Image (cartoon, rainbow, N blue to C red; front, side, top):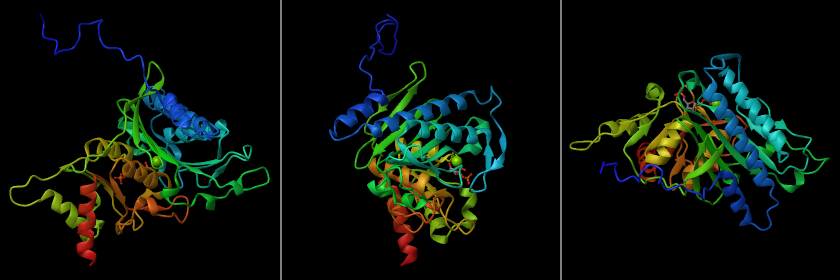
Length: 353
Ligand code: AHM
Ligand code: MG
């Protein structure tokens, strides 16, 4: 008999007929809260549609002339790619169409977008529609990062207004967050406040996100670091010492491996699966860091903490507790395995004491 590696003969594979789709997952989550109105579930359905649409256009980008610049720049001065603009438009339409989103922050928009036609919608959504877009034309993974806040009752209703200040809250106020990475397949990672972290893979033929990584747990340590080391001449001394110590661990010890894609979502997803550390430190060139608190740092920090990891800024403050001064405010970032982030904190403390 041919050695087929232990797989069953063709035609007799085990077919999973009890698949947990993202829609089923949200519905099952909702039934845990008898008081739930279903609004959050509807909002999540709209989010899921935007991820599928963005995944579809990214897959086809080179074929339908979607690579290259759009000829404009966004709020933080980055050149916008055509797909940045399309991703942003898809996201805005999906949120408006959900009827459940009152206000939206997008990296691509200078100001908040209010959906006054839905005055009773109780959710605020923050997002970076296509993060890592400088990688797009090379076909390297990019992603969407999102966070969801619940608005207080006093801003709901036809004669009420909701403003930017209603969004200037720390990550601890997020009720859900996550990201979708558009890579070899689209991978969606989602978490809710106080809950676990679950990963879904987009099955293109079914058009459904399928639960493939239930209850994700970050390994406590792993010798992989991910940082743009080209910036090291701008780093603080403690920061240079920390990364130096990973490469020169001392007699008889193995140095860390470096892995840097340059898309936070892709670097973070790998770190979530394998362990290690991802960092974008604040430095003398960017004293506030590069990544944005509201729609990049806080949602990622929530995912990492809920998966058993840690997430701090360049002053070793918990990322989840940072209150942005404005919607596009930035921060230094260190996130990853518990023991690896602890080493960063220890090195910082050694220098600052
Ligand atoms: P973007 O939101 O404009 O795409 O910028 C954020 C991206 C992150 O995905 C990534 O971690 C970082 O910028 C890479 O920056 P650099 O090219 O400086 O290494
Ligand atoms: Mg971006």
